[in-house]
Amino acid sequence: MKKYTYKMKLLNTEIKNKVLQSMMRILDGSKNEIIAANKKDLDLFDKSDRAMYDRLIVDEKKVDSMIGAIDEILQQEDPVGKIKSERVLENGLKIQNKTAPFGTIMIIYESRPDVTIEAAVLAFKANNKILLKGGKEAIHSNLALEACWHQALEENGLDKDWIKLLHMNREETQEFLRNPTEKLDLIVPRGGERLIAFVKEHAKCAVLVSGRGNNFLYVDQTADWANSIKVILNAKIEKISACNALDKILVNANIDDYATKMKELNEVLNSHGVSVLVDKSASNILKDNEQIKDEAIWYEEFLAMKCVVGSVGNMEEAIGLINKYSGGHSATIMTKDQDMAGEFMDQVDSAAVYHNASTRFTDGGQMGVGAELAISTDKLHHRGPLGLEQLVTNKYYVYGNGQIRD
Image (cartoon, rainbow, N blue to C red):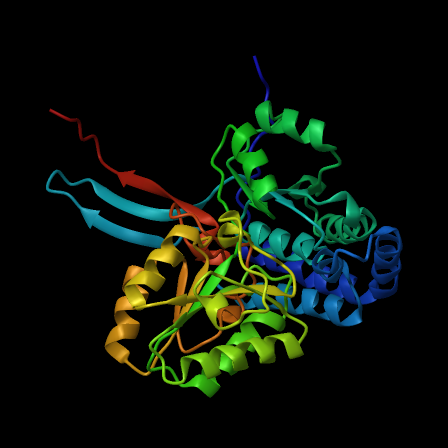
């Protein structure tokens, strides 16, 4: 019979906040050690993978942002034990539905050491134990950050097992997912298609998918063109390694001066170092651009200075392409027509839909959620940024005085 580690006990808000206060102080005093550990990882990394390399970097500013993320969660209300609903039945039973911890959350992620802070602080404040499975490319950074967590926990008389870094290769991880040595309640893979498929194939508990972008922007015929160019550039080049970056641009062929605008869009993107692939229709205007030969390109999240520009005849065609090919993460419509924007936002099946704004705002901090565990593209139990309030489940409390069911 399999023996599981017992679930971590419920902690009061005061002790959880004391751990976070300790962690902020410890991180601030350990900046040099953390940055030195990160340098070991950077020195061993292949810099040709720019997106992954950018995610790996930890400098003084990044440590300060980690401290800021903890402080933000420290200030937020404890999400555990909040009454969601309450009623008294005719038979006298009082029923409360209250928020409760998941139990143990495992997060599997690549490259980003700041996840070791942000994921752990969210899970811990929501009274969950967290198992961190970072990539081997960030091992020195993650070990340094785990040591800080353990110091903060021990200073406040808590077990180090609340926050634990797992040291497993691919085969060991696969075996752990199939036959975990402790009870897992939720797994969150943060990464590309291969990582997500690997976890879904082998995991025996709930998996909450996050991380895949492949975001679309549609330029309607009534769009403000200058505004559209500005939004496209921000969404595409501001941070190519982010899951909320832009990959596909669809332009309505009925827009005024269509050919001129398509050429301008291509030139602007090229001038900022972005290579532009085109569909068959757009290639009639952008004759020198590489044309898409494989449909798989439409499904691809680039994480690179590359995008697709396509041409559509109307909004319905754009919506059809987005719902077929996108990752269900974020999509934007650029238009002056409020009714059209409303229809687009209702019909597009993505976690976040935008009117005249960059997809780069799909982020916990930018959306007012605060630090996030991930951006979920699943529909159960939550879609969008997974902040503190989303890291709890629910539990029914039923109070009686001897009632029995007839």
